[in-house]
Every structure is written in C-alpha cells, then in structure tokens.
Image 1 (cartoon, rainbow, N blue to C red):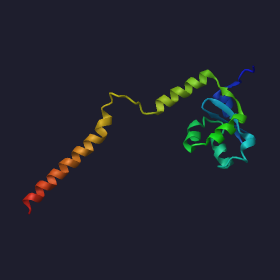
Image 2: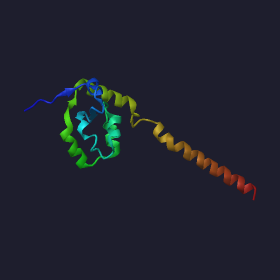
Image 3: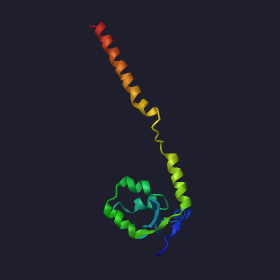
Image 4: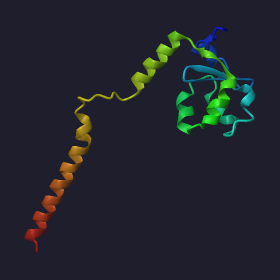
Length: 131
C-alpha cells in the first residue's frame, strides 16, 4: 500500500505556469499540465486556477461524473493537514454565518412588506377622500 504524498499551499502555488499546472480541488492536488490542451473549456480556464484552491471554480461549473472520473488520473496527492485547517478557517471567515437566532433574516422580508402595506393603505385613504 503506497502512502499518499502531501503538499503545502506554498508548494502548490509554485506550479502556476504552462509548464507545470497544479490545482487544489476538495483537498486533493492535481497536476493538470498534460490536460491543458484537452480541457473542454480551454487551457485558459486551468491556467487561471493554476497554483490555487480551485474547488469553488470547479463546483460552480457543475462538472459531470465523467469529468470527475477523468480527473482521478491527474491526482498526485493531497493537501497537508495544517493547510487544510487554514482553508477551513478562511472559508468560515468568508461566508455569512447561518444562525437560527439571527433576527436579520426575518427583517429582510418583513420590513419591505410592512412598508408596502402601509403605502397601500395610505394610497387607499388618499383616494377615498379625492373621489
């Protein structure tokens, strides 16, 4: 049984030109250099993500199961545990917290509806005196 090679974010970042293109997707490291010319979206798409965490870009496109199967042959390892923790921390900071006790969620729709109802009542009141 072979041990999986681990890489740091710094090591991945070193591979961001046409001669060596590595991307990080869901904690796995892929060397997609040989796939550049075959990529259906063009090589520019991969070069834009070279040396980076491309998970969000990969998922935004909605890759097929065939594409996900194909990418297995380009996997060269995974992100080290320390950097996985860094990515989780960054993602948590960059996303809106989801909190059941967050009052602003109901205020986002309640306030506009209240204003609309009041405007409607004022309009009816105004029209009833002007008729």
